[in-house]
Length: 243
Ligand code: BTN
Image 1: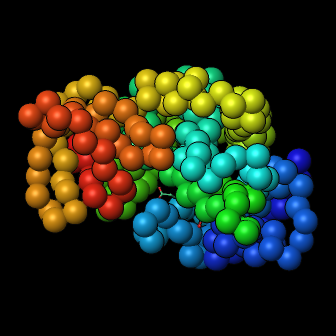
Image 2 (image 1 turned 180 degrees about the vertical axis):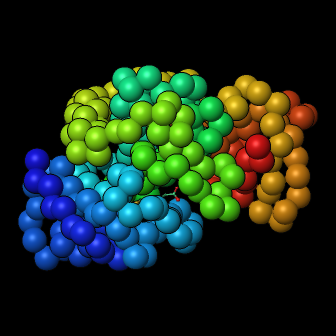
């Protein structure tokens, strides 16, 4: 495993994507940064993280073995690797808020940004960006954010966490490479935040509605049982869980 450690960069995802387009990189090449000046989150959001306090890194994985119809399994692998790591460190009440925010005690401690490289209509490689809040203890204007240190009081070694997390990625990627879709999906669904609990959602038009999260579809949409007992699936732009 090759780790490129940077002091500061705009975004480790952008850096690794550019690097991989110009060079042949080995699997699990990691770019980590103490500071990102333009950290990126999902759906165009900004990802901010206190300098040198957290894990902010991106990892490259060759995924030409995966059909593009199954690319949601990369989110599943990433979320499961994180939950496995955190449970080893005794972080309580870990859940996955669809599609792949990692929560502990209902607070977000980790975000994942996956950007796939497609060549000639086929998946080629995946840039998996992880922002794990580790030793940061103040989150200004982010009432739903937390960190490992806030949750259990310990100061964590970032290098050790990164090394351990890559091991967990390797574990779940080996299941994916063997075609273990069912086992991955059912483990992921068992960890879904608010699964089978009455929940309120907002749709793309800003209207509120109620339902129960049932699971995810093969292509990563959220399956919700609505009040009329009809199951409906929603993509990321169509639904927001309010909590
Ligand atoms: C989210 O929850 O919105 C996803 C956040 C992902 C943040 C990480 S930090 C390392 C990598 N580089 C980025 O610019 N973003 C990801």
